[in-house]
Image 1 (cartoon, one colour):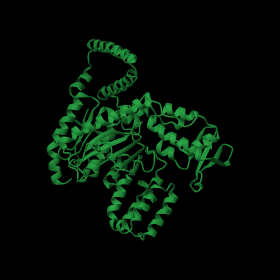
Image 2 (cartoon, rainbow, N blue to C red):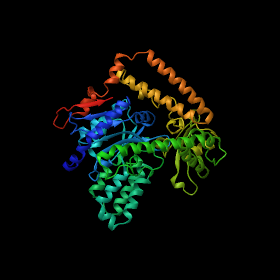
Image 3 (spheres, rainbow, N blue to C red):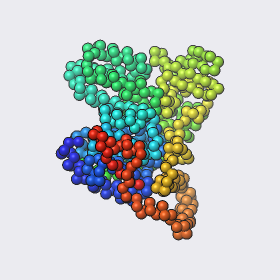
Image 4 (cartoon, rainbow, N blue to C red):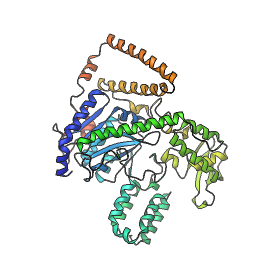
Length: 505
């Protein structure tokens, strides 16, 4: 970070810290941590609220780490962790001020974020192409699939190859087509070679470096991993979608917290509206299929619309059996007039399982038209349970979280208060959702709530707070030295010296 920018940020860090201390004092599940020494001038700052931590337990399978605001055209080196909720909307998983651009600082940030999320590792993570971030992800999340944002690569390619873009206007179109529209690795490889030969750029160093990193950004190499994408181009945009319209080049660090709260409130309102629409309105069905009706009752509205699109397309994508071993039948599925784009589906009747060469289900969690076409042939009238991801359903936040162990916190007094808070909050949300469905139910819910409040107050007066909980409640703001693996990973500098890290619960 430049000296000028550091001075501009430094004056507002205490404003951010005051906010974090206040929020943590009000809510035992609010988490923040500071890297570095006590003056907080050299290290990064991370924070995540209770709602984000709970949302991660439901939707933490794929994560976006956005460092758009880290570039010098922005006044605040702000970064965020986000994902997708059951409506396919952006949901926040934490924020950071990156005051130290180094591999050790990013490693600290990822380790601290992981610690706040009870060490539950995502299946995949998308970031801007950056060597320091890549090294930190490899170190802290070695089993998580790393993907570079294509929008950033396309943007940088346009800058690096400006002379080619100007002299050969069709290059950009064909370059993006080569990346976005090739479905198999062999198809991409062939298209790439053809592109380079056609424009005489076989020896271009930038394109060669992009080719060397192809497994981290070209879709053909990642179709077997869940990223929550509904289409190849859908998330081919900048990563800063959660704070877009709230944080910009003129946002100062003094303004950041206010804009952060506005963004959180805005997205929460959007989710509530989508929840209401999914629960209280019925989509228009386009077929007499029992499967469509089943999906309409299971999925949130946006996800159902995507499923419905796939289901309707089966009418134009007939399935033809090409092999049958007795246990596994193989089908060729192609759209009328596009037989050269056929896909292969293997179907096991006994287990009611199918897999398709397009790998849409693996990548997005929504079943593809090709498997649905085979289901039609085999007279499979309802969706088998293994093809309905709970994270895309109306009930995504009801019942057990995605992985029970993901929400388990260390068994000590400090974490037990957080655990109790999260459990009560989760149950309260379900209570509100049920209680608001009609005037009669609302009145019953309010009466029950008032009665429950009296019982809680009575129990609190009769049951003294334990010494441990009392110490926690009164001393949440004290600084705690990190120990074990977190300190080792997060606090090593390039010189091998040891900094301290501080956690706040």
